[in-house]
Image (cartoon, rainbow, N blue to C red; front, side, top):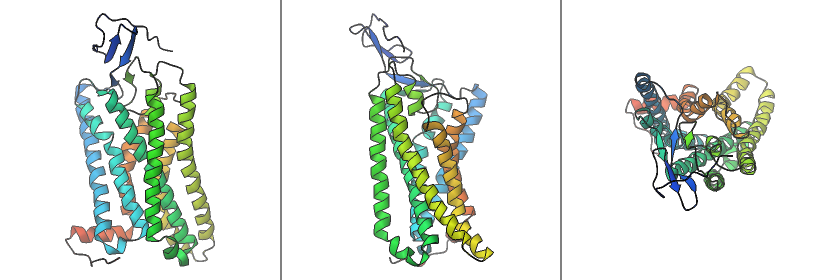
Length: 334
């Protein structure tokens, strides 16, 4: 419990800490939040800025290259690459919610964000994070159909079904993000206003609420658990079926080819769901490893996704090489 009974002679005027004092209610209201994570010395802060700037540039260029390649090459106009292009788009948006602000803060003496800006960042972060969960799940189902039901693949994974899956992904993400944001906005924030993170997320924000957050915390964890754990279980079930089918293949070369089609997806799923479970499948307590884990799944993993898919995918590498060499593709007529 945080004591909110702070008096002020100047009602409604924010002080230097970003709090608005109200003599009428004898309380304070948070106007802005201050990020206190990654407080480096000025020299080191500029070095870290250039490191993350380079990572963000690679993230943008890699995901844009994947989307352009899939769009340009008719050989990649299949459900697998359709979902891969959506993953690249989500990675692009997902990281752009947090990284640009983090880069600006590296060059700022005081790392602040307005209350409304904080809520907006939280909303879109959870929107795209949820979308990423579901697109990974859809991609796992696509691989399941391709390996376990190859003769019916084209019939099952129709263009209509793919569009419906993407539409469902955006719809569920919208509902999830609205629930998380509404629960967080309903909490009173009267100080302190220092967030132990580099962006506005639910766990560090809840710890600043000046009320008992046990019930809200449980509801938020439950909501996050339904999304992340539910998607993870669906992915796991898909891969149980996939592994079972691969083991039935008689030739070693056949098993190797079947596994190679799933290896990239397994890798990026592990990179994403592992940190998500660590951060969101527990009450809003703080661990020293949190910041490292958060940086990994918000910045590093989205940068690695296009690299992993490119290095392990011969078709994508050939298409990128053709596009790099300026060779034209045959016009695609769906």
